[in-house]
Image (cartoon, rainbow, N blue to C red; front, top):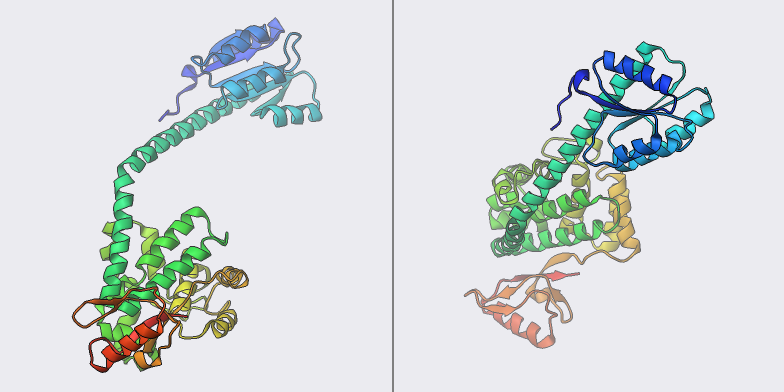
Length: 404
């Protein structure tokens, strides 16, 4: 990184066809400790400006020169040395001309002849400092780009590994609790749809995708029966069980090693059950205290976990706008409603409630672990009859998950 250096080491380029003015400018800056290189011929000076091996802390150019205008020379300097501060001087105090020079050549300062020496030294000092600051920023940016490229190469396998771990995690979640796995997948599907509405930037979209996958990891500390009750009959949870369920957004620390130390992701998952009006958990955050991505995840989770049918659910979500949910999250959701882009929800039904034509939201397995019907398969009359027979003999679970 370039450090700020003293005036004695700062090279300055001066171009003025008036040799007396050129000499005066040069002497004043040399006396102040600058390294001065001066030219009375702007064409000759232009060769120096275009030389990629020559660098200056600033360039001072007279506006009116016969062979090449000062503005043309400064435009050339802007093209070849964009970080170098550019100063124009003129014997005419013309505001329109000054603004044209500033706008067209991106001039750092405009000075009118005759000038006060203190003014000149102050302008050159500011211009030189500006140049070195810009060079420092540019070098930091280049270093950051190089670091990011190196990191991207190193993380190529890590990204592939992360995608594998994500799929493995969803499969394990489904194996532990089919309803938890299915509801998490609905959350993921809705977040993918929300990411296409244009309400979130690419960085936020990535975080929402990650958070949708892992938002329920804390529930794996609860029993299967408690998880099922929390989704199917939440009103039957005891106070102790409700307290345990409400702690699940806080139990995310063990996950971070899988995805890197994403502090933002941790905050989003912790806040995904906070409500806009402050009535949520675990911290009672409200309005803009809730991370923006968490505001969208909160609505996605509500959609996935709610037992309401879609028409009723859409009406309910609109009612909760500005209360439970952020207005823009509801607007993004309604955009999906209008475009019929909502993913299917899941519902748990008893075997005797099934009918042919329904689509399974999870695998149906026999009690010995043998797969009977795969997820996303439509239940045919023959399959339904077979499932009912196995249910009667207690060879499969009494409940299955279906899409609706």
